[in-house]
Length: 114
Picture (cartoon, rainbow, N blue to C red):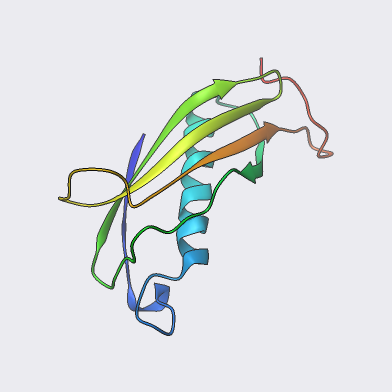
């Protein structure tokens, strides 16, 4: 699944680069969207990200391309790799991580995906 984000002035830290927490929010949201589309009618919550390493800064006006792909499905969880690229730039992603989400019931208890 591919999504796009525009880095706006309110997304910047005090050095003029994209605030890391904002990028993590977008990555988490994209993983959740991908899981929700892959498994309709399931309630998911994020339980972890494996590695957070910012390779290059993003600046105001950058258009980011976020790509989420499922790489593992367990009994109650699904893991997605989310990669972030600067639009119109080829090559390696500037940020990537694995996001694991678990399916829960209305009480927050893990339940099987299928």
